[in-house]
Length: 92
Image (cartoon, rainbow, N blue to C red; front, side, top):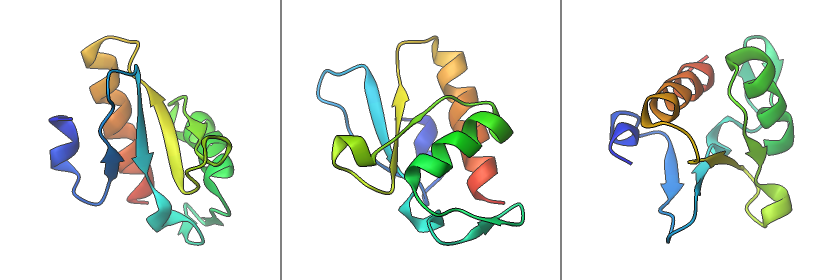
């Protein structure tokens, strides 16, 4: 959570003992990133994987459209790098 304080545009739901984090990236839905409109969170998750090399899952299947689910079952360095890549991607 500390690294996310550096990116005030990215909101999140604080996990309650779970090993995942839901990042609210709804502010990019409907906007162009790298010349392509992001239509929904599932498309965003695919683009994060293909373009930013960060594996996430769209939030719609979990009842939170506009969010992506990020696993915390990794090293802190990998998690922080993933968040940096996500932030850079959504910044365009």
